[in-house]
Length: 325
Image 1: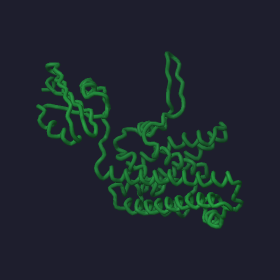
Image 2: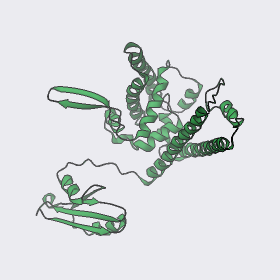
Image 3: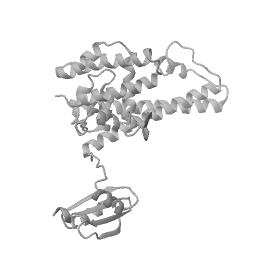
Image 4: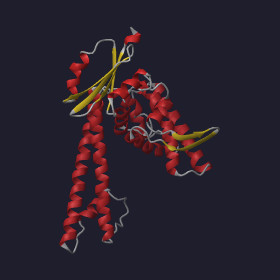
């Protein structure tokens, strides 16, 4: 029956879809357009004579997909569960708010810069002290005062939204199917609840990667490569995959510039976790700190380049710890 299999390619869109059937035995190709939402294709697929394999993508034509599938030239992706999709939406909602909050702060900061108003306090910008300083600012003209008040209000609204979503995410983390994985990832320095749940939402099942290098490639942390004849040249990282997960790892990588240590907060996160997980987390501290020192001190690399290199190895430790029970 293997030689008589039918290969089906679907080009799915919101209001109209195109499908093609390639019969490997006869070489016959059938193509058709179907009006309606994507779910109307389900009844049609049930009517295709078995054996059958189908693939869909928002590509140019269904026939091209069917032909590539029959030739074994497609890499099938993992379809997330409903729970995974729901968690990922909430995590990305928080990431969108974070981005909007950063933009709101930039707008307000640029307004003050244009008015030549500078914060001279001891604390960093956007601390409680800085926020109190903003509250007491006044402008001589009404237009500037209204602009300032609107920008500040937008910032406060976004800050409240971010805090609420982060609180909800922390509660969901304890109840989700990834609760044990999140708890293990939190044993790593620089990765707490929000970072761990973000990685789980973006990566999904760590076990689908046979090797940690595959995870690093999936996250776009490996160098791009240009090869011609006997010449091999590596460039910047590919930046493929989830930019959110990549940012979380790069931000966590900066923690490894400090000397290995287990403080009270990290020790609390270690409680109740398997000994192999704690050992792996400690090994990560020692190795990644040594890696940072080598690249930064001995080779004089810039912090951003060092952080990316450390993040690539940190992804491997995440893979190891996520699969440790």
